[in-house]
Image 1 (tube, rainbow, N blue to C red):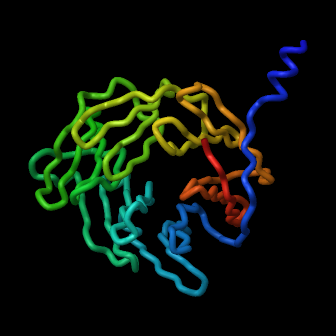
Image 2: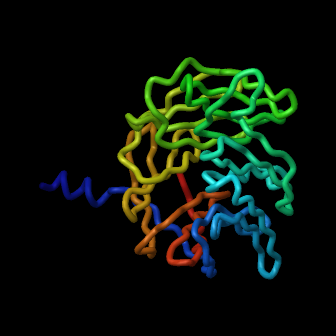
Length: 255
């Protein structure tokens, strides 16, 4: 009993510091950028807003916006999975390019995952052969990088040089632009997640957030005042929570 009580008393908890709250009426909060612009979707219209400044992009003919990639504010990527298409936008949400993967001349692609990669390319997961690859904007060519995946992708995220994913066994892996695949470990059951580094992932289970270390294979709860968490984002040591039409910004220190 003594050892048990000591173990519980020493359980590591992370307590972020609340910095601000702001109102946001949206169907889906996407993220905030380093300049304070908020990106969100309402009525399947994509918005960028800061104070009284508001931009919007609407393309209802392509159906629902499945995913938004904000790595580069000058080249925002909208993924319309239902129409197997990608739209890129500039920083004022003007359309700069349109890709319909079904019309790819060399090899039709049915994509279920898209993200911006380096050197004018996109990460693309082709769900027909279950292969990950890179799509070149200029050449309009898909280059496979991996062997067919054995397990479905439950979650993914990208940066310029890596494609991260969690499979149906909750195994976390990543592939670089040269096709090298590495496995980081497993995480507990989750509703949503964000991979912070090759050692840390933040995940949500119910209304509780956890910080999981692959090295220690251990999860630590993140203490929040929020009772309902609809969406969360980690950016530059800030934790952004969207709930009940309000954005709460916290400062957070992660391992």
